[in-house]
Length: 196
Image (cartoon, rainbow, N blue to C red; front, side, top):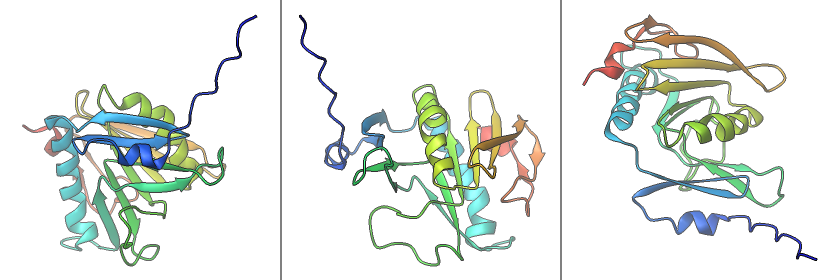
């Protein structure tokens, strides 16, 4: 008779903290995901999108303001499958409405779900972003999610439905000029994201 299979050990936040600083680590349902820092094209898209949204929405420069928009914030959510443990995710961009988060926390992480997230997809992150993180964002009540693919030059739009399930909106491509919730107050020229 064989021995019963051992239950795999759940990773903890201490495992996440032990990851070298040149990597990005996330803790999702007790599994530690370690990825390389974003490649230049990925980083460029995230930086440009952050700048295009940050100026009018975070700074109020030429737009309505009212947001805190941050690059790669670490966000902690309780793990419902394992009380006392957490999911720690790092979206490429996240935004909180000022009325929900008037001041940044003193901690190195954010305990409050954002109102909007954006994940920039790459071959090494797409499966985790879509299959692991998107359900967590929905479960925690994030209202808007964007998935940006710099290789295929697309921006997929999702909004949270009443049953806390993602409703897929349009997929915008290439040089489209778009107004997308929750940032429809400005027109976003997608060609800026792909320009070298």
